[in-house]
Amino acid sequence: MHYIGCQKKLERIFHCTEEEAKKIGIDLSLDNEFLFSKGCFQLDCSWPLFQTFGEICLKGKEDTTLVLQNGKRMRSLFTPFQEVQIFDVNADVIFQNVVLTANELTEIRFFNREEALRWATTVVDRTQIQMIIMDELEKGYVESIDRYNVKGILEPGDHVVVDRILYTHHGIYIGHNMLIHYSGEGGTIGEVAEIPLDEFVKNDEFWVYKHENPFPREKIVQRAKSRLHENLYNMTFNNCEHFCHWCVTGYSWSNQIYVGSFLGPAGVIIGKVVNEGDYPRYTLSDL
Image 1: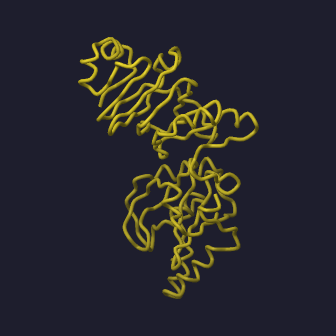
Image 2: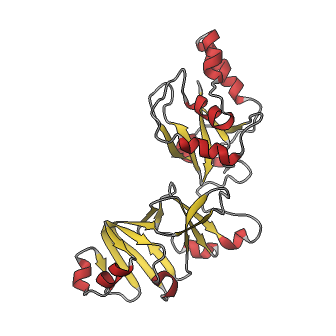
Image 3: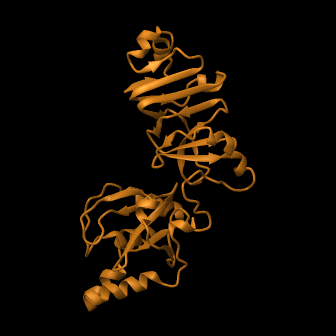
């Protein structure tokens, strides 16, 4: 992996000959363009060229991944109680034909939607990067460039339930179209992991389970993240539903298992009905 943006490295990479640069997969032959190929490159968010250069285009050739890092840290605009890495986009900075990810949760902030659309050929890792339109924020709301618009439906800290026909699956929504859940479903062994909304919901209906006296939303998300990578799944004592109730209330609980312990398989179905409640239901097509 090559590091792009460190001042010492700048002298070696951008003041070297074109032939020397090509050896590490960077083509410097075009004015104001940097062509990366066949590799993974760490990109410093504080790179002076992002602020002082004219138009700069970072293009990928073949399999190219750029990893954003060393950005300034600020409170998130999309999830206000969370601190994230920031990459403020200069209007003249464009990424093309690359996979863009980051070494930690990062917000890329565009001045307007037109700027964001110039990155149309960039594949963005949504597990690490959230893209925000700043001029829409000034109108009183944040419209994130997520695949699914969950405004008014999901908020960080929500206990989300999805209908799997014979049982329900549960997760904690943490923002950025992402949830944390116990990945074991239907009795299979899994670990606590982050998962994109579309992979969690699939083609099924979902809803938000309402709790009495829940923790503050920030604390719910923190509790969910505190158990990431835990690998102690147990369908009876520590399943996805136990996990979500614990995150929201502090009590490990499963309606499906509790009722099922008295009534057997029929009780699991009744427990599922309890989970359904009288909540509005949604599918991905509603977003």
